[in-house]
Image (tube, rainbow, N blue to C red; front, side, top):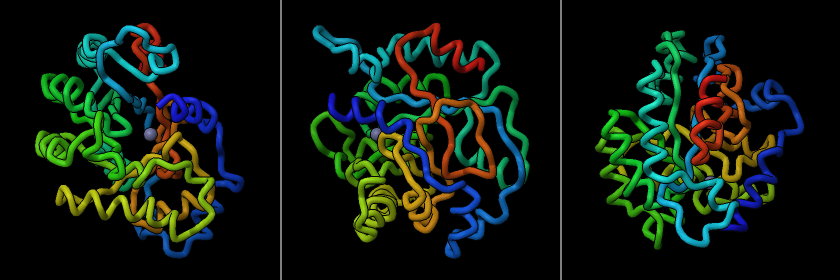
Length: 263
Ligand SMILES: [Zn+2]
């Protein structure tokens, strides 16, 4: 986990070499949906959680950065409701992108990465309590392993009004994969596996470590996803760039949380 976390920080800065428009225009097999995106930039913080569990003796500062204790997670969720925020989903965002369907005032999105089982144990009941939909980016390579969600937990959460999205098959750094068949297996393959397991269409993607390049974007588009989330800290979702959505990694620092969601 430690290694993963170090890489996460490093890869947050990876950017594609050509402009987004160039990638879009050069991809003939892009879905029709991309071409019909309505204009608009939604001011919407997309919050990113990793582990939701109590801190434990000996926890390193690095791991702590990616862990939010359940009581603080609850406080953060409560803060959103108490301060006029409305938790929205990627379906809502897509409706806005496609049809200009208005978003509620102060929209916010809650995403949880990597399929840690602690998200089912601690975060899911809190999300249910506040009637919020969380978006869980999972990768099938970890499902069923120790400390990770099982497919039955994934299915239970999906039935419990949570959204399930793809985070590749094995959580690699996509820009390091030069074999296109392997890249496709990671991106399109994971979509197929999750759909088969839960019986629901998977439309959204998140880049492991937030790392992507032109080829990653192109493959995500060609695989039939409608959005992809990065870890570029920002609070704007731009309809002209649905494959590079911003996201904010949330920590257990409540004051930092308040300042970020109010940016
Ligand atoms: Zn990840």
